[in-house]
Image (tube, rainbow over all chains, first blue to last red; front, side, top):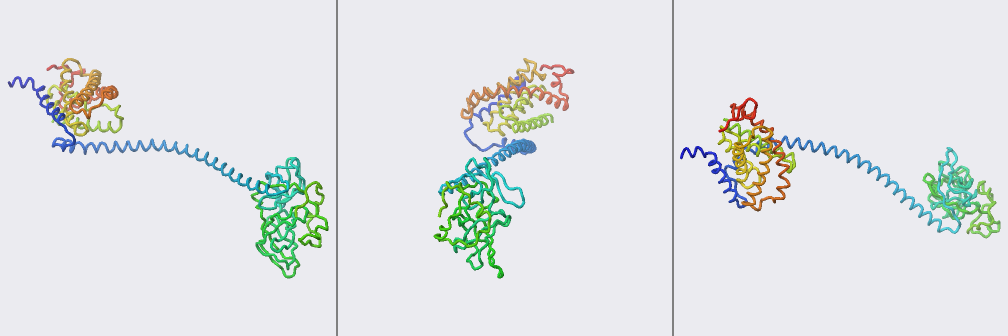
Length: 311
Length: 178
């Protein structure tokens, strides 16, 4: 027997070990408490495994972070490109929205006027340090002639001082050569708005006893034979009445922001001075002395076919 | 002392297997513990200790995995015994035959695993399609790792007690049949 046992020791040992294994496996019925052997194996191996796993996991995490960093860097570059592209698109869209609003306003402005008008874009700003003019992209081809008034939905811009087939030069209201006959809407006090370059404009030739106050709205009087009556010029910004002078000094904050001028309307109407009888029946009082501005008096040669000035 | 040294080696392999599991996807994991258990079947003078170690390492796998208790113990013990039987008929003690044998046995191990589970724990059994899909690559990788592992085991054992059984594959030794 001992000889047999020694001879078949190995297969017997295998059977002895395998049989309980299969029995345990076959009898396994769901979750159960771990036995002593299992707890022993866990107690021995798990701390060691943890010791091995920690640096491995650390190295793996480091590698993952490195690869992630490379990926993030690439993604960042792509996103930056995309952002720049979107910002560019966004800028164009915003510009389009602003332009659209402006065009709508201008169209509404043009639609509300009975006089024929030509829209034009400002394409050039005056380069000289003293004069204030712009060049627009419409000219004689569109019917524009020198002396025609130029306006926006905000108010008076100036007048056409020169015209070519495809472009026109516009003298702005703030040009020192510019004079516009205007009146105070509230008190009907009349005077002349004179361009003062960077300082805006002054409301001149207003007698010191006339009722002018800060914030009063100035409108074109229509008596300078250039601008139709009732266009907004600006508001009184400052009034002073030096005691020794006949006229009060008034600074005007113009309605149009000339630094942001982009689109304008040219009124296709060159007006003539109304006849003396017209003044006699008008409710607007006309001063006895002639207007001091050459611009107000130097363009009486209007086109007789163009419509008469509106009341 | 030798058995303890081999047990430490088994523990080391378990830890290496843990690293392999951490780093490689499931389909690309070689079964180093299987290679170790099979190598225990090559032991001549310490065959009983080898068989116990194979079962023990399988038991550790049982405990440390979600397998039903006893499954890997039986599989690794069977691997050890099968190797011992095959070693009598075929020459396995060189890296290339050993690698080929381990690859083939890894396939058989998958079949045994799936068969045992289908038979005893049907709820946990992988489908045969899954086995066919995953086993070949894993078996090939196990074989690829088994060749170098045999060298490591042999060197460790030789440094321990100069067991002539491990020198069979080397140029200086001779094969000893029991």
